[in-house]
Length: 261
Image 1 (cartoon, rainbow, N blue to C red):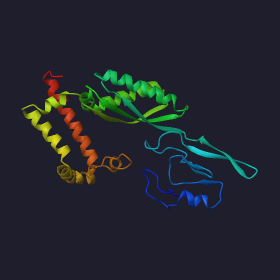
Image 2: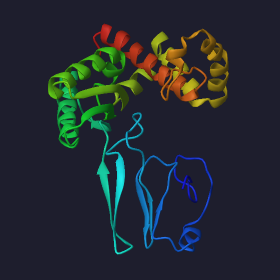
Image 3: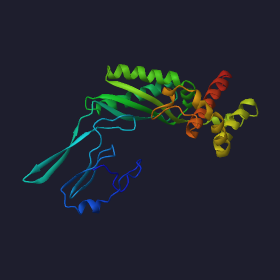
Image 4: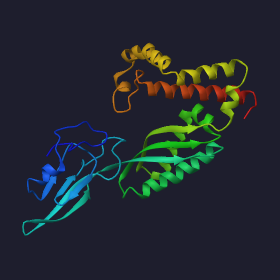
């Protein structure tokens, strides 16, 4: 039955019903559709979201397949998951806390990718890589985003031997120490960084900026705007991420150019 039952996280309510309502029908097994993540709701009787047979994007991670229902003498005796996916999606979070160099980051990425490959059951693996944590190398990560992404992809190619593909490299790191010192500077750099910080903290000003750049949507290629993670300048979270990149680029180029670490 195609339904979201009484509501599932991340899904709008669709053809709502209750577990008690399903039980009242006297059936031994309910196979529910609509939700793509496998979930066993109950076993008396069996109420199961088997999920979809193939993850479609980076938000549909883990093994995907079907439920094998075994029946003996007219009764359900077992329900087992059977993996059918050809490509497996994985969200690979890498803790780079306290990392001081890019090489140290790449070492941790390699270890995380090795672990993800080991858990993929021999499937082709598509990975969204997330670098997380407060680290001294944060500024360089942000300023060299493209280089970092390319290095991680190259590493994946070596480790996976064709069986590992990185869909995206996300930076969710933060700076330790030096950003606060830069914010306190009584010069053009400090003033510019404070302006960016104030913009990030001021929802009204940020909303106005979003409105000002929203017309970019009509000028961007459709393939850049489309998809789950399309580039949409009207999204405040995208503007915040861009501001973080600008801030890191300024710190990297101006502070390091002056010999300050």
